[in-house]
Image (cartoon, rainbow, N blue to C red):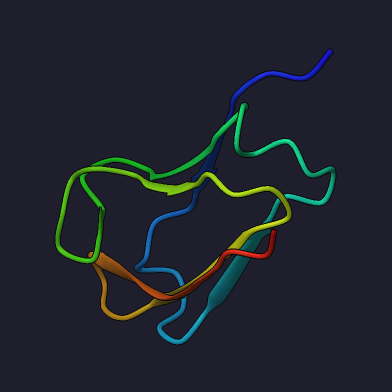
Length: 79
């Protein structure tokens, strides 16, 4: 059985320019969302909320922008 998943990415201070891609390879994200969170007080796009992949076979690409922040470069919703 599948369920919702949370992916925690490491602190942004590691390597500026570092990228992460989170992909729904199995195709269940519409009913079992993939939440992407940061360690500690890190933010995604200046928010304390998470990024969410919620489309089957969708993906999110994140890049480390500074020592405290990740940016979402793109959300690919492939149905």
